[in-house]
Length: 333
Image (cartoon, rainbow, N blue to C red; front, side, top):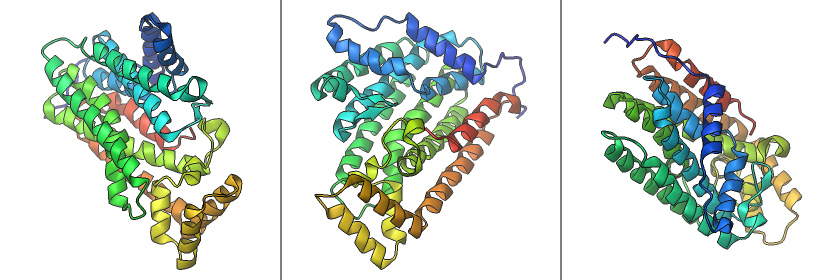
């Protein structure tokens, strides 16, 4: 098949991010009572990288350049993502998000839960702005993605009480909890642009591989990152014995002596937080865990590149996606 070669204006990532910010600034999603919507405004105002709506617009821009057709529903994806963060922070009792107090710390858990519910409903209102003939398929994909995220979160909570979580189980959990939203964002843009089924499926695969890489990077940075850059306290996963890729690999790769020491630290109720972080990190270092997680990240970098190669558009249109792969592979926050 000849690659489609008609002229399309290709936006830069910064231009797309600016379009998203401008659209967000135009939207009046704060209603009465303000106390319900103010926490949504608070978490949305910080913005983060806005990776998911950027990816939705990038996927649309592979095929078309009238990005206003997908802009509002892409905002819906970003609102939905922030809804999941509001609830996740309550379940994790997290104190910091993007370097600022979480909603549950700034207000309280009840506010975070209810405002999260309102954010989820608001997200659907934006997703439903998609025009026919794509609306029904968009809603079907979005519903499946939303349910997958709930399944992933449930697995994550169940893993808290298990000491036998396997690497395969963990990868499946983060696929559901994190990767499907990134993959779904990309498929969303491609679908609305009229991409053929096999291509928006390939873009979904690309996004899911990207999402797995993203979560593995999160696991890595929680131990080896810098608080000032990462925006969260380093070692939080260690302190709460969270079943991350690093912990699972340590329980697999460590010497018998280090496994016993690691389990001892996991069972302690009273401990000095800094001492525990140092001790567990030392076990990771001795066990080759740092290298193992980096190898897994590199594996998904390769898989994402393979999926991108299945997209039958001129190579120059895919350059922005390759920039995303490189940036995520090297990210520090």
